[in-house]
Image (tube, rainbow over all chains, first blue to last red; front, side, top):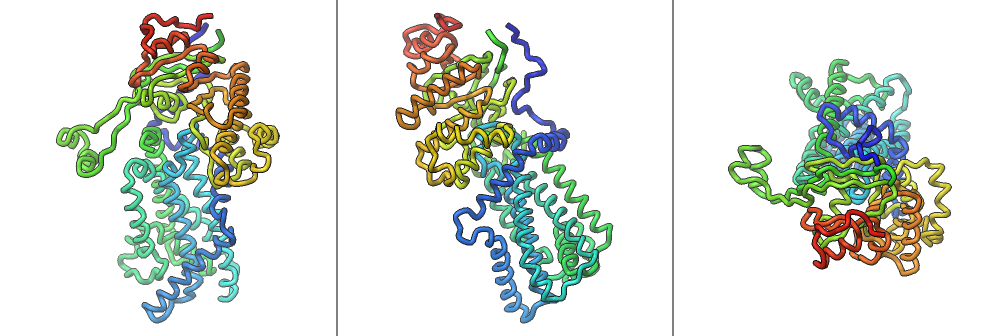
Length: 281
Length: 257
């Protein structure tokens, strides 16, 4: 009888050091692609289950929100801004993608309590699959943009390519913040409440209901540095319109560097503490 | 005896009892200094220095009063809780079957849940789809498999859970008080299925209060008390210890035949 522990044995759920977090994450994502895909399917399927209109809601919901804010702007300012419906709608669906990625990532442990307490598997799958399913919903929500673009005289040019990195950057940023807050939120539910209000605040602090020219010239660089969201939103809106984006490349690169740094820090912290916070679920 | 399957090495698990309010804030923000001011958190030792080994094909029973740490020990063995001290070594990914519901999503249909569960257990999609008809028949859910789980009765839910593990055959199966579910016929069926798995050399750990069943099917039983192993060994002897009819020292280490 051989009772020695050899290499075939794994220590279940071993502690992950801070600097190993990202490597572990990449390894787990690669090994568990099938599982990831199934979770994306799950998130996608249950969102509108039980509603009559189903996926049509992913188009209607942002449209209704945009309508509310259009009325609000007309009431307060007495008039809209340049191509307002188009820009407003674009901003709203992008912000919604960001918010849902962040909140879904933050709540990924508490929302999946049932499954987590049943079997061990890499729990970082939840936040990432949530982001991917929200990406699908964002693409669905972009369809109402087509008639709007048509109405304003649509012109296809290479500026539209800016949309892709804008979505990408926003997803990375939201996912990073989600991972960053997840463990803290699992222990202290206060974090969730604070975050909800912070996001609401951020909505008004980002160029969604207004345009970037509201920010005084001399403060613009500082503003764009501390709010990468503004960079991605601006890229998306101008890109959509086929107009060249009025941002310097250095600012755009900076926003990406910030987002990727947030994601790396977020994943590292998540992997470091995730094993110990399960006890609080 | 066959090869080693699971080894627990001095596993301890401590829960922190969360108290809210100022004390918590001071502790969170001031670290060690804060702990000196308001005292450390109240803790609860759920498992204390647990060590044992399990071999492939062995069936282990867990008994003990409520709150003695049976479920927590199973959750530690499944890798769900990370021990504060000590390590759990395992060759395979254990699966924990506990209570009703089985971690399924209420809004997904039975079929979708099975696909999800299979993918978590690392089974190829093609193989899962092949298994589904057989599985549905076992769970007696022919008319319900494409309905969302929220429409299921609790018995149907438990049957689907049982069917999931019976057909995906995790190599290490941890069972927490589930044989009590379902109607008597299904109970008989799941017992048969578990016996089948046992014979096919899966390792099974089972927490239960039905001692007669455990004496029947287990090779060894562990008696837990206050998060510690009070006795381990021959099923009958350990149950005797539980009732105070025997001293823990007199338990035979292996099943008497």
